[in-house]
Every structure is written in C-alpha cells, then in structure tokens.
Image 1: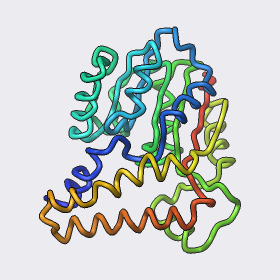
Image 2: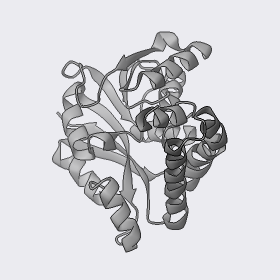
Image 3: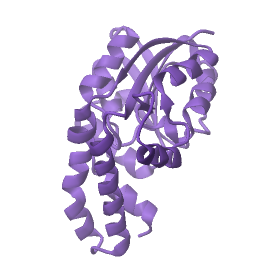
Image 4: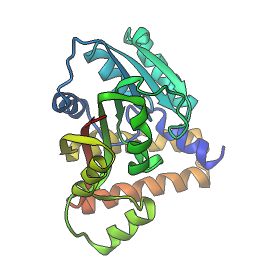
Length: 250
C-alpha cells in the first residue's frame, strides 16, 4: 500500500477529515439566513465522508450533490446516508473540484468545509461562482491567520504547506474582488480541532498501524500527524479555520 492509500486508510474511518463541528455548521447556516423550508439545490464540494453533507440533508429541504475525488470517502458517505434515511436527498459525485461538470447558475448554495485549499481559495471562489445562481450563497472554511504576526517557525510551516494562508481581511477582500458580498465570518473554536478532529485520529493510530503491519510508511504517516497536532497545540492562538459566508452579486 503506497502513502496515498495509507492516508485514505487512516482518514476514511473518521467522521471528519478536517476541523469542524455540527454546531459550527449550524452557525454558518444561521449567518447565511437560509430558509430551511425552501427547496434548495446545494453542492458540497470536497465532502469527504460527509459530516457536513449529512447535517445539511437533515436540516434543510434540499437536494445535495456531494463531491469528492476519493471513491472510498463517497462509499462511506453513501452508507451513512442510507443508515440515516437520507439517501434520497444526497447524490454523490466522484470528480475533482477543479473539473466540475455543473451547469452555469445551477446551484442555490455552494458549501465547502476544509477543502477549498486543494485548489486555492482565490481560484475556488472565482471558478465556482459560475455555478451559483445570482444571489446564491457561498459557504467555505479556509485556514486563516488570526493575528497580524506569528512566530517564524509557524510562518515557515504554513507558507510551505499552503502559501495562500492569510488573514481574514485578505480573504474577505478576495471575495469582494470576485463579485461576492460578504455576509458573515467566524473562527472555528479549539474543540473543532482537538475533540472533533485530532483526538479521533489519535485514537485510531494503534489500529491503523496494526492494519498495515506497523510498516515504515504507516509509522511515518503517524509521526507526521503527531507533528501537526503538536504544532496546533503550541500555536493555536495564531491560526484556525475561518468560516466565510458570502452572497453572489450577479
């Protein structure tokens, strides 16, 4: 099993593939002022195993297209949707977020939690705009600096991992430049990282290593995850995911 497959093996069993929480998804819904009784067409891009998809399906009168480029994740989502009686509201789509087969102005809402970094925030909000109806809503979470300056070690790490990391004011400026009207913004709190994402991953390390014969590649992935967790615990006051809610102007 190569490193890519090992990462899938580690993360597909998790409820979330990144920081987030049900309370925070509901908060974003409230900020967006979405009418929960109105029929909606929603695309959840980079849905992973469906934590946000399933909650949106439960709370809204919506048809949701759940997009991911990993079949393993979509299969988990489909199983969860069936068990929750939500299959009729969710259609899975295996494709890359930079090559979406959607029609112009097809969706009322585009949702993407913890995934837009895969193509970059600016490219994502610009490219996905065409799929939103005029007045449609964009809700995305994006890694964000929460202070004006930060320690050099942290700066180097994140600029290496994701050069587009920036402050909320910069991200909001990108939205405005691309014909969106910002509606709301908030920062994911610590429990979204530790309790909802990192702790379940940590609890899975032993079984993950056992499944993969404790080989060097699996050990290296666990060590990388531990390093990321340690970095967050050390520097959590300087960064988080910001949740951005905006309306397409035209």
